[in-house]
Image 1 (cartoon, rainbow, N blue to C red):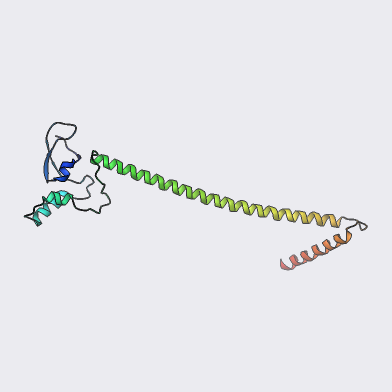
Image 2: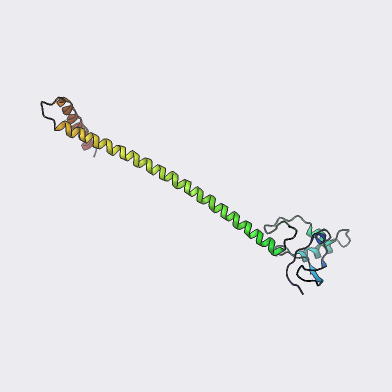
Length: 177
């Protein structure tokens, strides 16, 4: 006895019947078989019985009618000759795993793009802050050198203007804060 699920060959698929004789590939004994859904998504024997009851006289075998129905089932997979039901299931799982890997790689790539954009914004801000600090240091140096000039220096009037501007700006800050 060879229990389990076995591939229904092309001849059977074209001339399906409710029960049938078959010889599994690993044995030389003829076995009785019946149509069933490997994924247990449909109860094919019950569907065949219902068709037989509804159409007592029909030119089409009820099993043939049930097998050839268009099915909208999330568990359905297209038959590939030479691949038994467990093989189809393994292929389906491998395909799902590959799709999951591709989705993960895409989300990882999207995340890396987001991090790169964030890093670029961060670097830009640091650059702006560095320029502002450099300008402040330059202004302080100019102001310090203008104040430290002796009165007979060439640019003393410039130094006095810088000092006046500095005092004006300081008074604005004092009033604001």
